[in-house]
Image 1: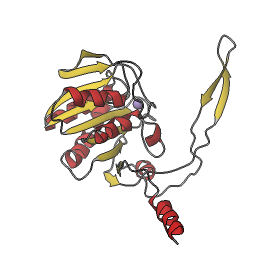
Image 2: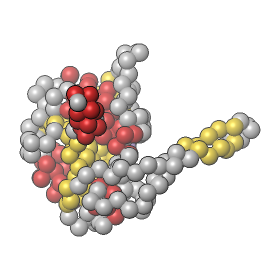
Image 3: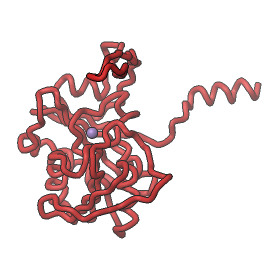
Image 4: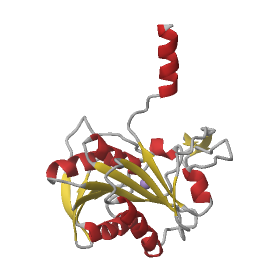
Length: 242
Ligand code: MN
C-alpha cells in the first residue's frame, strides 16, 4: 500500500511525524507537505507562480517540502508518485470540528485527494491542554487507522482525536454560526490592526463531532464533495414544475 502523508502545519510539525509513523504500519509512506505553516488556508491553490519542491528529512521517511498550500502538496505528491492508495493529512495541532471544516487546510489536503480520485482522511487533535502528547495518542491513532485505512466505501473522512479517547463515534458535522467578532488593536508603531475571532454562538449541538469530542470520544465524520442543498433544490424544482 502506498500512502501519501501531508498536513497544513508544515513539514516539521510533530503531528505529521506521528501520523507518518502510524501510517508506516500499512505500507510505503511518502511525505509531501508545506515548508511553512498553512493553517486556515482552506483549499487554496497556487496558480500564479510555479511551485518548488525540495527533499528533506523527517525521521527516515521519504519527505519533500513544497512552497505551497496543503492542496498544492497533495496535487504534487500524487502527480510525482504513482499508484497512491490513500492520502492522510495531519495530525493537525488543533481540532477540526464544525465550521473549522470550512477553514481547515488539513481537511483541504484530504479533500484535494478525493478531487483527484484518491481516498483522503484528515486527522486532528486538540491543543487546549497545551502541546499534544503524540506518544500518548498512539493507541487512538492506531485504533482509528485500523478501522479506516482499508475501508474503501469512504472517500473523504474527517477524524478528530482528543487525548485519552474513550472510543470512536461516527457523527455528523456540527453546524454553528459564529460571532465573527473583529477586535481592533494597535501595533508597537501605532498602526491600527484587526484580529478576527470565530467564537461559536449556539451552545448545544447533539450527535455531532463537537458533542463526541466534548464527551471524550474520537469523532469520525464522512464528508462528500457535493455542497448542494438537496431539500431546497427539490422544493425549488417542485415549485417551478407546478
Ligand atoms: Mn493546522
